[in-house]
Image 1 (tube, rainbow, N blue to C red):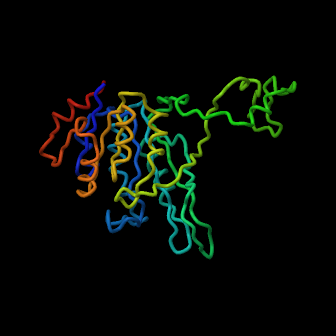
Image 2: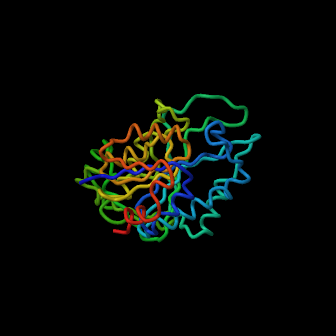
Image 3: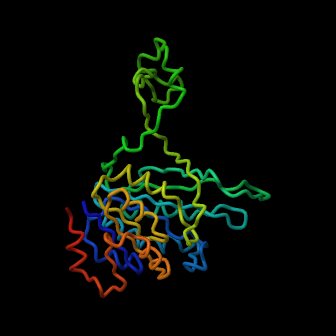
Length: 292
């Protein structure tokens, strides 16, 4: 199966206008955070971040398939001793735009840098917000199952009467469990917390994330041959992982130096390049990403 990886130089909100509706299976990206990476991306003030992001998310909503998923990696910063609220404001604005805020995953950074502040501890996690166009979407949970663990050898060895039936929560939460369902199973479903180290080799980019991060979500929300989009491509990690997992992908980057860096890393035999807007045009894009 031939895997296509297309990268574009420019602003995603402009380039995506040439893509047809309902053509992308998964969007996985980490945009510039508010007031960070100023030397690279100029910096966006927290007060104007929502206004800056919504034109891009409008196009993302349009190109995402009804069965697709959008994963947004983002984190509030501390300013003058107080957490910014721009991420919460963005969530509310995107819901008004038509997105479903389906879930929130946490990336626990196992090797976060040490530090000391007078009124807080060091950050060791980031958000991964899941948005969808519809409440029914493709999700392949079996692809990210994890080993049961040693606890199962003792806990499931001898079951009580309660373990062999659905045991309702005693606090009236409505939750319950049937321990016997897990006897002889080797794998279990994971939680919504991902424990991954940060990218120690930053790949000549100021905010590269580890390959394990997009890999987990690509496995969870796509199958081979699907198309993954990273509208803020950066170091190209999402596209590199998608190519390795036999997914087609699209990357869009506004900084020429990063675009050229990714262009050199992507396997040439699977790469189509568009350096300038006039090089591709509406017709070729619509043919290439016609809904399949």
